[in-house]
Image (tube, rainbow, N blue to C red; front, top):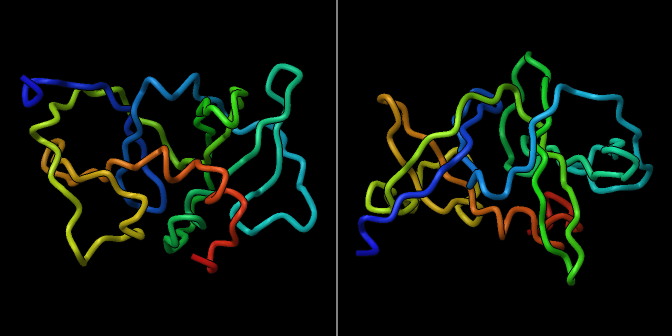
Length: 156
C-alpha cells in the first residue's frame, strides 16, 4: 500500500540543476520583490522581503547547496511555510525558474547515491527521473531547519 502512495512536488531549476520540493510546503511563488540585506547574516541568508506586512527570510539555495553559480540571476522566490517552535513562518527560497507541480509515486523515488551528486547528500531525500532528466528531491525538513539556516554554509 505504501508503494502506491503519490505526492505532489513543485519542480524548479537553480544553477542549471533540477530540483523538487513537496508542494504542500509551498504557499506561493513570487517574482523577485525588493529585498533588504541583513548585515552580518550567514552568506546563504540574502536578506528579507516584505510578505504582506511580515518579513520573510530569503535563503540563497545555490549558496546553501554549494552550487556553481551561472550567469543567470535568480528570478523568483518560492515561499515555504515551516513550523519553528510552534510558530509558522515563511521562508523565501531563491530559484532561477519554477516549472510545474508534478505527481510522483514514492516507489519512483530512488535513494540518493553515495557520490556524484551536485549538492551535499544531507539535503537530498532522493532522485527521480522526470522526462529523461534527473530531478533532486530536496529534504525540506533538513534544508529549512533552524540549525541549517543559522549555520554558516562552510561550517557543516
